[in-house]
Structures are given as structure tokens and as C-alpha cells.
Length: 430
Image 1: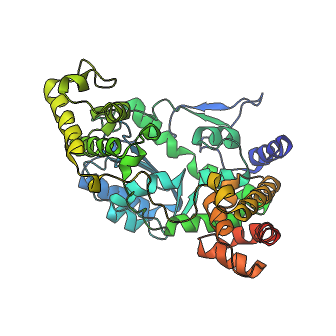
Image 2 (image 1 turned 135 degrees about the horizontal axis):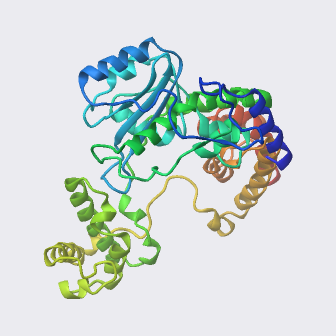
Image 3 (image 1 turned 120 degrees about the horizontal axis):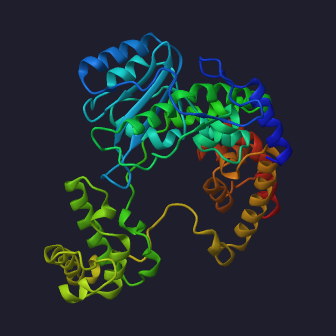
């Protein structure tokens, strides 16, 4: 989006966007400055932590009206996994609810009560996995972050969107705290409640803007794809994503990374702490590169440090020894086999025509994305473009290219927008 477009969109939204809080306060002061939103309009509700209180919330939200704002807080960096430690909801007629999913681990009944109701989330793909774990699965949703991307806003974080669209400043100081803490401090709960306070208002304003730009149907297609997407499969060989792995070249060293990573993961899972708090990636890579022969040599490496106890060093050294003892046939291969085309940097040598197709396709997609005022990756997934360019249809036509895009998961609006430029690129470089 150009500066002029952004200004026009911002002006349109501020004059026609979502309704302000019930107290009638406008989103900006007389001089146009945004207003700090410090308290939820009905105050901070008590945390729901027993079945009786949960039943009351379920009844209230089932009787509410309109979309329901939903958010979840995790303890990334503190606990093992990505489970939810607080769930926030807000709906007209029901107010705001803060639910403790540790005390109430099964929210299936709440999810069922909201069946058929549109859920409003910000960055839905981040929260949906942990919500599904506790029984909450939307059948219809509106993602305010994705809506902002499609509308061309350069900053799409919740705070930036609420300020730019509605004229309110949200306090964001507690986004990275340990949400597994019990009891949760009052300032954290206030922050959590405010995260859903204006989410439906933001949704309404963005819907109007998407309609104005002719993109509302596109957004609905994207939201439907998110709501119906199956859970992501487990990663194959997750140890290969260890930070600094690019330094590890030899297969024996890779085996050390694998053994240390898996040992760390077992300990972290048992203790319910973030793996990084058990042993850092830097230490894993240093041990793999050095292949230490003794506990003392291991303890001298960066990342193990003087605070690492003898017993801890011995368990890490045991993992190193397991890797050293593996026969050649059991050592990991240098690269993870990935289905699909090779990395684009290798295309010029492997298939110059494919490289030319990809270059032309990327340029064409970039032009379309700029014209539509949205990021290229939201117009069409880069991996989809690569796959079509690497293995184009036998007979290149608008119909065959469109079918290839659909087979790779592209939505109809994406097919409509990018098929012409991709067809031209493929035809020009057979």
C-alpha cells in the first residue's frame, strides 16, 4: 500500500469503522492523538477456575449475540510445548471471560456452545492449535491480522491495528511473561482482558475496509481455509532445526546434535520446561563440533559453563558417547530429504529453463501484489509458485495452470489473480 493509499484507508476506517466502547468515548482526542485504553469497560473479571463458574460462562456466551472475540496466552520460552494457560473471550451480551485451562482443561462444552458463531482472532494460526487441544474448534472465523495484511496495512500487530484503525493504544507490556504463573497477577489479567476488548470492533472496521477495496470475499476464502485446515503433522527430524546447525558438516557431528537434542527434549518434557532452559542450542552445536572425549573437555566448551553440575555434564557426555559409538550405517544423512523442488539457488545449474520461469513468475507476482496492495506471500504462497515453475503442466494454458494452483491448495481468488502472469511466465520459458 502506498502512503496515499494508507492515509486514505486510515481516514476511511476512522470515520466509518467499528463502534467505540459503550461509554461513548471516541477513539481519538480532539487533536487527533490516540487514547490509551487502560481498563476493560466492565473491569477485570474474575478468573474462571472451577466447573460451576465455567458452566455460568458457557450459558452466558451461548445466550450472547454476534461474533465472539477469542484469544489465548501460552508460556513460550518457559514451559514445554505450546499449551494454553489462559483463554480470553468477549461477546455482546456476555461480557468478557478469563478462563484458566489448567483448572478447567476440557472446554469442549464451551466450544460446542459457540458452534456456528463466528470467532474473531488475531493471528488465528498461532492460537488455534492450543485451543484445539482443550476442545475449542471454530467452524467460522475472522482473523484480524490476516485481514490487515490483505487490506495492505504495513503493521498488523494487534496493538498497531487497534491504534491505527480505532484510535486506541493497548498496553502490551506483558506479552512475553510466564503465563503458567499461578495466581496470575492483576496487571497481567487486565492486559489479557484488553486483548479481546476491542477485537470485534476491529473486525467490523476491517470488514468495511475490505468491502471498500473489493477484497472481502477473498478474506472470507482465506478464513475458511484456516478454519478447515487439518492440524500440522509433526516435523520430521526436528533436531535439524537446531540454531547454528549450518556449522555442522560431518555426519558424526550431526549424530551428536541428534543425541543431545533428543536427550534435552526428554528432560524438558519430563520437567515441563522450555528445552532452551535445559541446554542451549549453542552448547549442542559446540559439543558436536568439538566431539569431546571427556566430561572435563565438555565442561570447558561454550554453553556448558561453570554452573553445569557434574551429573548434568555426565548425562550430556553420555549422549556424545552414544553418537561416537554409532556405526556408519546409522549416522544421519547430510540433508533432510524434502518433497518438491530443490532450493532455488540450485535451479540455474539443474534446470536453467526452470530458473528463468521462476524469475519471470516472481517478477509478475510482485507486480500483481503491489497493484493489489498486499504482501506477495498473502497473494500466493512462494512454495506454490516454485512448484508450478519446477514442474509446469505438460500443456501450458490458463486452464491447466489454474488447475495446478488449485491442486496445491490455492484459493479461487488467488487462482484468478495470479494465473495470467504465471501462464505467461511458463509459456515464455518452456
